[in-house]
Amino acid sequence: MVCLTSLHTNNPPMPPKLNSRRALLVLTKIDEILAWERRTESDRDTRFVELGRYLCEVRAGQYWRVENLASFDDFLERRFPESRRKAYYLMSIHEHLPPEARRHLKDVGWTKGLELAKIARRDREDFDCATWLHKAREMPKEQFKQEVEKELTGRQNEPAEIIYFKIYQSQVPIIEQAIATAALMLGSDKSRGYCLEMICADFLAGANIDNGNGQILL
Image (cartoon, rainbow, N blue to C red; front, side, top):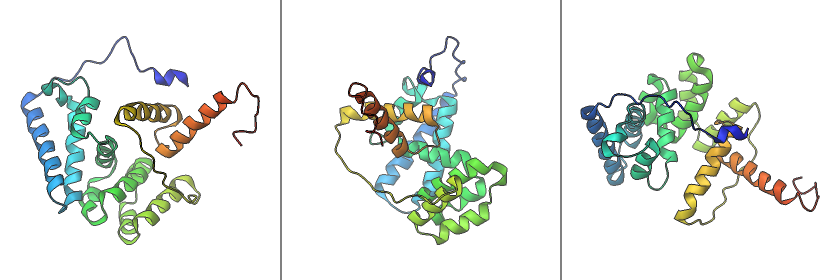
């Protein structure tokens, strides 16, 4: 699995031909939506669907090149300095939810939309849009999240706990890279919490080599 951490290639694909006019238009739209988000709560989820669509287009067309940036990650770091996860969530909603579900996202919220996208990604053309939209409207957010987890794993999700601790900004890139690498090795459908658990388990296993206490991970 170590090979998954190496993403270099001797023959990288040719970048798409840059449409500078379209790129500037899309980048302006993204900045307008982000500025609007800071000003108002009204119609937030409808605009987030639009933002996810534009972000996908920026990635596909490599529009970040008009700003002399090196990569899409650099573009996200500039637009989403606090966390890039939100951008990827919105892109996932656009990529996996059918148009009918995206039209009703205002009724359920983008966080439930992300859960809907998980089901849609699995079921593809067999996605029962009407049934899952009804559940999303009727259920509270946490209950709906558990319903999706049960559907995907076949078991009821165990009780969860949110742990808070402070990290410095200089530590964020290392932590994000470690979790992203673990996701590549374990599967992108795994939660960030599960990836962190496996990183910690790997650390404990390495720390346990010298003392030979094989029970520590139990």
